[in-house]
Length: 151
Image: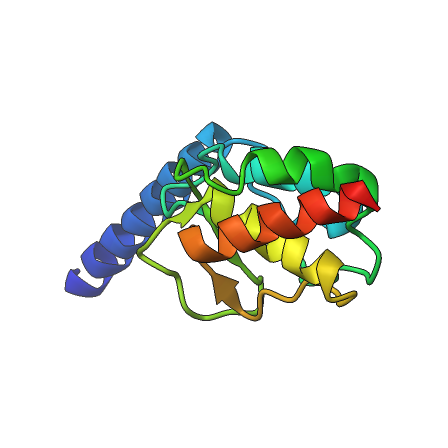
C-alpha cells in the first residue's frame, strides 16, 4: 500500500511541476530565444539589450559578428551614445555556463563597436561581456571621429 501511495505522490508531483513549468514558459517574452547577429545592426543590438526579456538581465546572442558588421553609417549614431550610462543587459554567449550578475551600459557597447570599426576587427565579446563607459576612451573616440569627418 505504501508503494502505491509513494508512486501516486510521485506522479502527482511530477505532473504538477510540469504544468507549472509550462505556465512559466508561456508567460515569457518570445524575444528570449537565440538570435543571430545577422538580425541586428549595432544600434538595434543596443536597443535589444535595453529590453528586459528574462529575469537574469542578459541578452543571449550567437557570437558570430562578422568583420565589417559595423559600417561607417553606424558610427554617427554610435558616437552620440558613447557617454550614455543607461543600464542595459549584458551580452551572454549561449555556450557560456556563467550568468553575470552585473549590468552593461549603452555607451559601453557603443565604445566596443566603434573600437572594432576603428581597428578593422570583428566584434568579439567572448563568453560574456558587461561593457561600461570609460570616459577617457569615449572622449578619445569622439575626437577620432571628429578628425575622420574633417578628412
